[in-house]
Length: 453
Image (cartoon, rainbow, N blue to C red; front, side, top):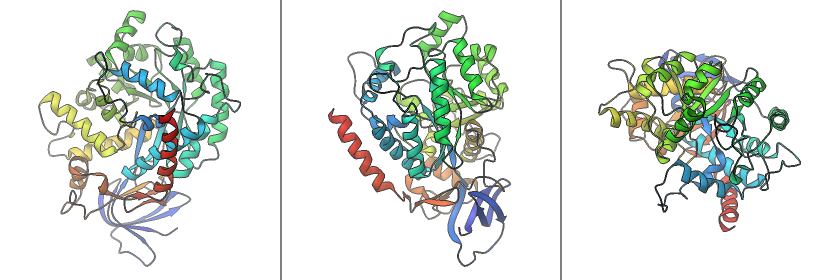
């Protein structure tokens, strides 16, 4: 594997010129600074660490754009969910693999190098476990292997339709497990995942409405030292239902009943009081924010400014995969604050600081924590997950240092990402994944079948 040389790179100590990286066994084994390129080096322009996509439902990439029409009543998350249930009724393991691979190609092409797959589509269309209980997880693992993306698999426990153990509805039948069945699924998924380089696994109780308190404790125990992700406080109706059943708001309930710590990622956590915001920040858990999906579903706006002022950690995810692009997720995060606060550069962490750099570095640290990836960034011993930006792109031309991140996040397009290395292997060249067309052809065949059913 050749050394990689970059005109400039964002190292742990900041932007540095003339950087040569030596890669061994997928990790950064050597860093030279102020070095000229040597014969045989693979050359790049501006190198930054790849970001983690902390929250993905890969199969939903296949329905992106299919719910953008007005229904007979006011549309919200719940009407969208009903349409989603009808779409997933038709998906088999081969379809799931094809759709996930397309999503993962788009993640890599846009600068995500690892994904947290919040995987809840487990069973056959009748709701019965497949003979191979982990076959849908294996479809996700195969998609990651084909594309090269780093994978943190998050099998989801789902048992009920609402608080108090309400019976599940028909559309949820493919998600459902008992604790014993879920433990078996986890074991089989872990075995399958062990064959994928640098993959890891966490667990995900779907939400407080889908798991009782006892079940939530059981799932957390199965996670051992791995990440634990949960949807929480995404919609106001969920908050109201939680108060009606428990007497507490969802995040307040988690803070008082579960041992929230840095292993946890609270996905969305949109609707928080000041006390919940402070408690979440102090817990060390990560807020998994998905601004594009949250906007698409009309969820609301996370109190990012107040949360970051209290030292809270966050990562960004693509969730429903309506649009996959980390730069646009971070842009949407900042713009939501500007619109609600009627101010500019809200999330820059100090006077004179770059907003783009503040967002990027925070998302890098929080995303890596949420997905259980040690050693985030371009540093010795870190995974060689590297994104090279095109300094000749009009959004970056004439800029250097943190202004490169500002240019990409606030005025760039997908063409800004020129190359991506995953574990030191170049998987994106001139903005295109090496297997993009083959993956897209298989994706089209899957959609032809699903949309004609």
